[in-house]
Length: 224
Image (cartoon, rainbow, N blue to C red; front, side, top):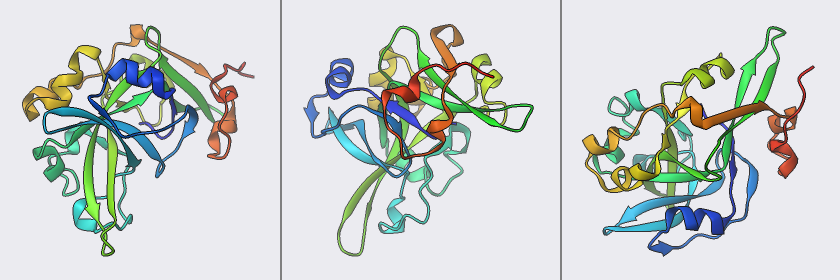
């Protein structure tokens, strides 16, 4: 699962994804939370576009109401969901740039210890997401998204022992297939990322609140 994540700076993200058109503006964040607007790369008229989307998908039929706004969806559940089936069949896929994400481990003392998970050789990486557009009764247009989750690798199983799903981290060579490929080709890019390319370490429980947002949140701490 991915409930909170860290966002790199805009220059680094644009260097990684090189969008054809950029309509976004953002600064680094260390505590991205659901219902915030986040940068996303999508495909429009054959060109990659960099936009801001709400994290927490509001389906088109909801007419802008956020009663249903899930932040993640399991790959296996997409086609069976009335929320995601149409966006998937319409190839409404996007990529969210991350510097890393947080996962919580339930300890023997029933305490949820947060960990920061990142890639060893990439300061920014993309995770697969699906998006939709909803128009309210006042004609306000909301574009929103959910992160796709896949089966966990061994690292994530060891950490998130109460919820082993992990975000679908994309390899660089799969960016275009995910954005532009057929549903079959896009699905083929989704798999658990190799644990040999990942690192996780415990961080401060300050991340349990959505209020703090500073670099100390991703600083390693000693377990007691």
